[in-house]
Structures are given as structure tokens and as C-alpha cells.
Image (cartoon, rainbow, N blue to C red):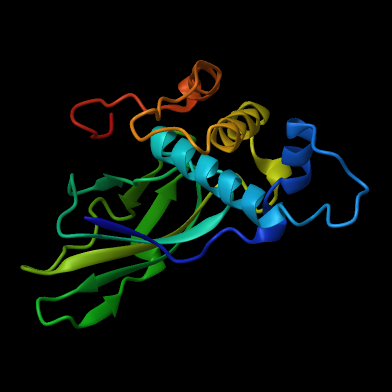
Length: 198
């Protein structure tokens, strides 16, 4: 299985101003935006770390997920949440020839923790022998920072601040701060039956 981000979050969607306020940085000075690229990097790092810990995508992105077998014949839990749309499913044979699956043959069951791709007729399309399937989907709470739940947004600011204030920390001092862990705990997936769906 391989998950590939096809798009990245645009700079304009990142809460750079909110981060500056959180850090109590001065405003109104000449060159006040000179640190913006640095602050943006810390925000991206914090978002990435929180997404990795929770399996939740904060700001909307496009993904392609490839796999060689469905976990169950009729349904497949998807690797990120929340998912707003599955835009395409493709079957690829052992020679690399790709065929698009009709959208009427599958449906998305939306869920904030474990969205599921279902076969619309009782089974998902059969993946060719020695072949694979690719699923294109859109994941994230929305395109704007205001779409992100407040507690996850606060966790990003806290973690980005931790990165900013400890940028010279020695290797091995990378423990998630307690406040961040507490805020993201309700969003972490509980593995059931090795990651299968109930």
C-alpha cells in the first residue's frame, strides 16, 4: 500500500497571523513579515506531526492510495479522515494498463474516524491478479483554517510554538508536549481487529 499526497496546502490557508499573535510577536514594524516563511515551516511541521498522530487531515488535500488487495471483498477502510469525496477508482493490471471503475459501482461512507469505500452491488470491483487498485480522494476538514476544529487548531499552534522555541534542541528531544497530546487524544484512531472495520 502506498499513499501519495497529490496537492499541498497553499500558504494562504495557513494561520501565520494567528501564530504570530500566539507567539506575541510585535506588529507594525518594517520587515514584520520577514519571518513569515520560517513561521510557515513550523506550522507545516506541526500540522504534519498532528496528522501523523491522528490520521486526520486538517486542511483539504488530494490523495492517491494504491493497494494490491481489498481487506474485505465488500468494503475497505480508507487511510485518512475525514474524506469528503472519492473522485476515482482505477484497476491496474499486471502490465500496468489502467481502467476506470464506474462511479456507480462504489460508494463512500463518510465518517470522522474511519471512512469506508463500499461496493455498491455487494462487492468492490475485483483487483486483477498481480495488479492493484488506485483510489483518488479528497480529505480534510475544509480548505480554510476556520474549518479545522478549535482543539486541533490550538494543538497546531502549541506544537508549532514548541518547535519554534526549541529549534536548537538536541536530537532525541522530540517528545510531543502534554498539552498537545491531550488536545489530539479524542481524534486518535483506536485500532480494532488490526485496523479492520467493524
